[in-house]
Image (cartoon, chains in turn cyan, orange):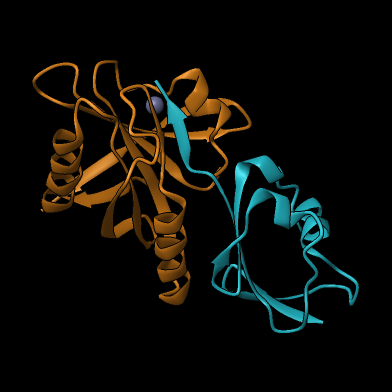
Length: 67
Length: 133
Ligand SMILES: [Zn+2]
């Protein structure tokens, strides 16, 4: 099925979910912000959030640092 | 390719950093082909003198605009209110954007110091900045 990830169309398997997608992207779940169809997900929601065709997903690593 | 900034864009970055001091300030530079078209001063969600985190909602909004306009994330900037313009160990640890430059503005001395770096797999390399009219 097709979703939109960070503004670009992307094919993912039918049974894909957000945590599988994060693994594919080599993203560290504790270091990213995830938005699904316009809503930012809590860390606890990410683990078993399913994906459906046409979902708009944004996954962004934090932009931060320190002295 | 050196990152090209206009004097007005540079002034906007410095103004944001000075306004937020003594807290660290942060933001995003967008554009194409190393030529900055937009400066986005953003909120430091940490509200800290020694760290920054670009507020995630603002980050999502700005990155969405960049994708819509088919621009690129050219640089992430932040200030060091009281330390030199060089990436800290935490700056390196949290450098998740190997294709973006990292600009650091030090306000430690009266004449601000502005330097630009690439941070890839823990390795810091300084990059030229070109200020144009
Ligand atoms: Zn820093």
